[in-house]
Image 1 (cartoon, rainbow, N blue to C red):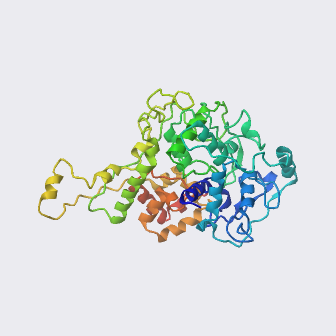
Image 2: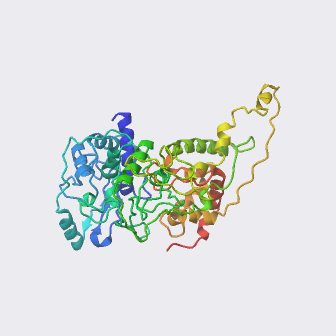
Image 3: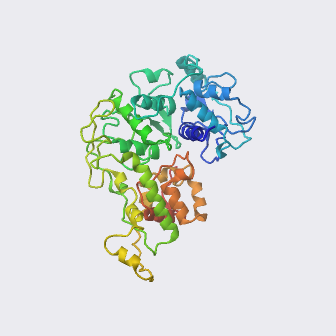
Length: 478
């Protein structure tokens, strides 16, 4: 229950638990249908994890909750259809601490989640594949490796905390992550629209992540944005709390595993050595804050610039030509593999280098320059010289709404279309902040972080189009 442990527990819970246990319209982790699993297996529901004593887990002991997490064994002794996590004792305790912390996510909800039920075929297959026995691991005494940019820590995150190995390895066997096909992708899921999707090959083969820089990788797994600027597909979670050390460790570890030639049909996004980043990924217009800019916009720009500087700290050592974040071109990673590089395109291969246009202006706006500001500062007070407003960017909002992936969730007929009605009562500035950095409002949100892709004024043009009812003009997804 220490502040550090609660923060760690929140990071793990938001990344590994919340997506399944909080329904799209719910404010709490009160359970949700698990539509990602094939319907032939049966109907499954994630449990209510709120603090309600009967519908939730308020009366569960720490030992019972720990058993669920470590072995996927329910309180009444059944093996469940959920991942089991071999995370170390300290991380497991941190998750339990966060669940007991009184966070609003766990506010009591009296509605019990429906019971999960196997079909005959699903139940038979599950028992055959798993042997109907939980994973073999000690009940206690599992250490957490020292946090560092090492292969050991990267493997721990990939296998035991974020569970990348299970989702990116085909099959249901509990031992599949120990086989030769680990991380080669192909696991089948059902997305929220009912379409079958298969997990991507995340080995560093040409059919996988061979041409991804660490900057590409970090933005994808943390912010949900692929190197081509598109949103990562559901049900891929967002690892919002991932810091620079974890990102480096995870990236280097995946580079160290054997490369697998596996072209997963329909899996995306893939980056090739000749891929050109589309121009719309790069911020569309230069902006600056002057005395004539409204206070809300000035605040938004300042916050965005500060956040961008924080977000891109991971990639501070990434070469401008798209190489990996190593000491220099041709340097080796911790795995001993040569660093790969991606040619820069005319549209800007390193998206983060133009993360928030105008950020430099914000950062320097309060500092005197060598071209006369010092003289102005020492002169008698006078009325400030107002600069003309920078022109609003010309934005094709409908096209941008589709390109950013917004239409898949908020277009006509999509699962969150009705939520757009709430936008009409909010200010442009609040909506701009939400569009660019939704994780600041809802840490576990699956919505991508768009701050690297669109600047404040472009976002404002987009939200004004949304508030005017623009999405209703798009074709229905049904």
